[in-house]
Structure formats: structure tokens, C-alpha cells
Amino acid sequence: MKCSRYAWANLFIIPGTILFCFLGATAGSLADSGASGDSGIITIVTIVVGIVFGVLAIVVVSFYAKKELNKVSELIGPANDIYLGEI
Image (cartoon, rainbow, N blue to C red):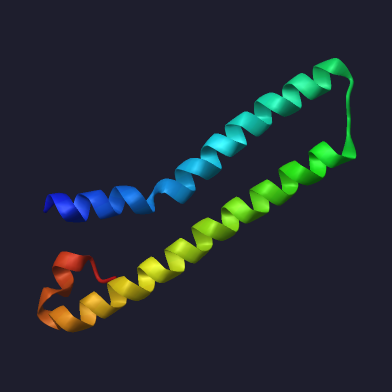
């Protein structure tokens, strides 16, 4: 695998990484909030909105990645589909 392709692939995993970091931080924040007895509606709404936008980012990136992989598959041709794993 070329280094440039590897670098691009690492760039495109950032939305998922951010989402999982956010989920971990949110779980810690909720645990602290529950321990202190604070149950602010604003905190819950912020967490839900963050999770929704995080999942939406992953869906959008996945959609465009699939679209580009289909283009590459068409350019390469059916003889090489076995190497692409029948995308």
C-alpha cells in the first residue's frame, strides 16, 4: 500500500475517532453528573445533539467513501473485482 493512500485512509477515520472520544467523555461526564446529583436538561440535550451529529458525520463519510469505491471498481473493471472484495 502506498504511503499516500495510507495517509488519506487515516485522515478519513477521524470522524469515527472523534465520535468515540466524545462518547467516552460523555459517559464520564454523565457518571460525574449522576454522582453529584445534578441532572440538568441542558447537559442531556447537549449530549444527545453531539451523539446525533457524530453518527451523522460517520454516515456521510461512509456514503461518500462507498460512492468513490464504486467509481474505482467501475474504472478497474470486473476482472479485478476479486481484489476489491466485490464492493
